[in-house]
Amino acid sequence: MSHVYAVREVLPSMLERGSGYLLQTASVVALATHPYKPVYSVTKHASLSLSEWLAITYRPQGIKVSCFCPGPMLTPMLASDGLPADHPILQRAATPEQVAERLVRAIETEQFLIVDSELGLDSLAAKAADYDKWIGSNGILNS
Image (cartoon, rainbow, N blue to C red; front, side):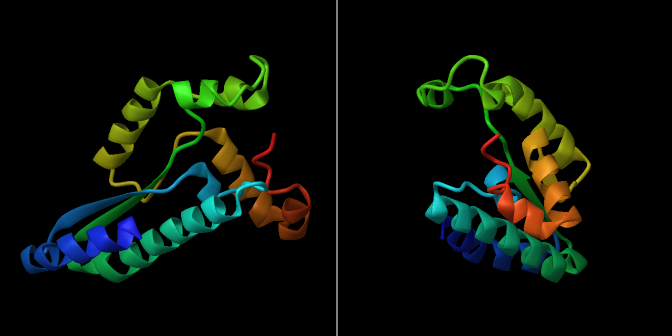
């Protein structure tokens, strides 16, 4: 609900000015899913959906919207998951510095969907190509 509360606070003054920028942060899970984390998956999908609605509804009124869907990041939290060093998730993870650089570049170009991981793009493409196959693959996020 934090996205909703934040938008309720800042959107009125943005609309009054006729400009503003909303950056919503979801997760790569918004484009894929996590078969073992249902609440997390559903809330991330909702964050992306809210961002889409905000962009469709308010961009014509000067409000820019981006949704950042970061993938795995090489942080102590990821390291504490106990994954082996050769695990595909760790092999595809970016450093916080790499993620920050990608995020800043995407905001500069006012990109709506900001994805810093191939995991999200791979899942999105697989979902679009064959939804039933994607469902059968557990949303791809487990590879």
